Length: 158
Image (cartoon, rainbow, N blue to C red; front, side):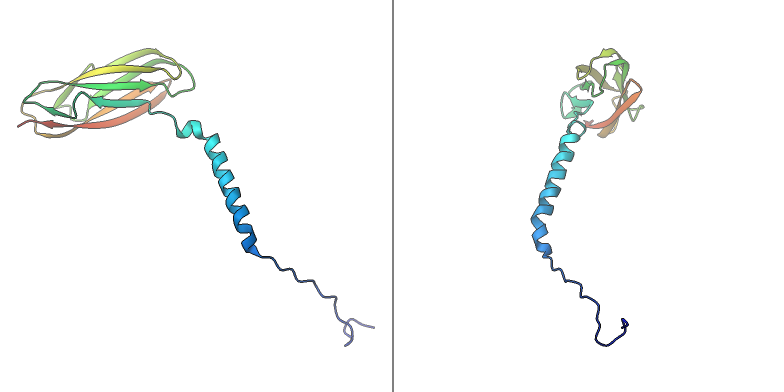
């Protein structure tokens, strides 16, 4: 007898039926568990504070009322070690219009997680500057890491 005989047939393969809708909830649960695990593992990275926080004494600078303004910079050591010989620099983008004193502040030691506050005095170079937004670059160099921020303030001169 040959396999080509009329009366012979191959054994039938059983048919499987599977309802994929039953996988819906386990897949969603697995995704939620993975997202929660990712957030837990990376939470220290996601919720690290900003190393540079900047605020001004007033939200705008009216030259008809005063001739200087106080800028407050808070430095937070976000590194996993103490910072040694750090330098904080504040510079106006338009150096012909404004000056900052002090322009640079050395920070000899800043412990892990430690906060330090600094004040900078902003002054116009001349009384004839145009009203508008003026920007400042704040830069912290700490243990070969560089943190930068740009802030602006509106200066009114009418």
